Amino acid sequence: MNISSTASSIGWERTIRSRRVANRAFALAALALGFSPAGAGAQDPNLVDQGRYDVRLGDSATGTETFAIRRQGEGYMAVGRIQLEGSGAWLRSAEIWLRTDGSFTPVRYRLESLVTGDPRTVDFLRSGTRIRISTSSDEGVRVNELLADPDHVLLEPGLAQHYYFVVRRLTAGGDRLTAVIPGEGREAPVRVAGTSNVTIEIGERSVDARRWELTVDGMTHLVWSDRSDGRILRVEIPDRGWRSDRRADE
Image (tube, rainbow, N blue to C red; front, side):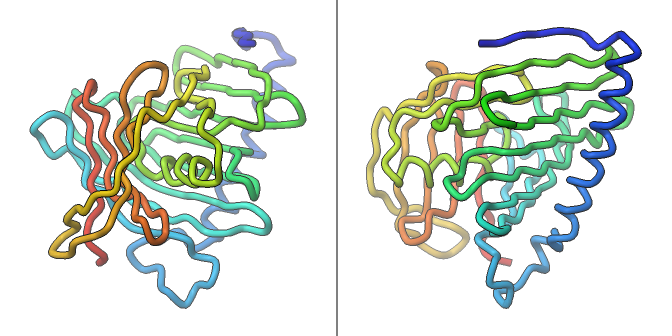
């Protein structure tokens, strides 16, 4: 179920203002986790993964995605920053926050554009049986509502870090998931077309990986995860010419 509307009334303005206050609190909570992937150390017992991806579109290197994932209470918090250049990128420079519950189901998400002249934000909130996605831009506010599903995962095309939660759900036994795509305000089926064990090079090191061939709304997504701990090593969407490669540990 998908319901769209445009905020134009005084009541909506009050709702938007209160949501902005909540979003600032959410952002501060993410920053309080100490988001600094390059400087995060193994001494943090809650640190699940952290690192950097080199992003390519077609034959060109276009930027980087930096991220950290930590346990927070019974769930997880992922924070990140993507910095891309060039007109071919469908997702430009932005900061991202994602919180999930203990089963990796998304609870809260926010994307805030860092592109000058493009004050776009995307907010996702799951509450009870409903999911509310609010997108703010110069054109106004668009609101989409979906029915919450325990098989939901969150995928923002162009972000490699989100596949960590998808792979964790798949290895836990769920092979028919539904992706919520916040930037598009919709959901799409996720299916496993095949898996295989391979070895790939990360820097000068060979890593035993599992290669996942997924279809998301009929489009192929290729994902390579570390067989030992589930870290995402590489993600590729061939039809979009997009690929993210994990850098060697810095």
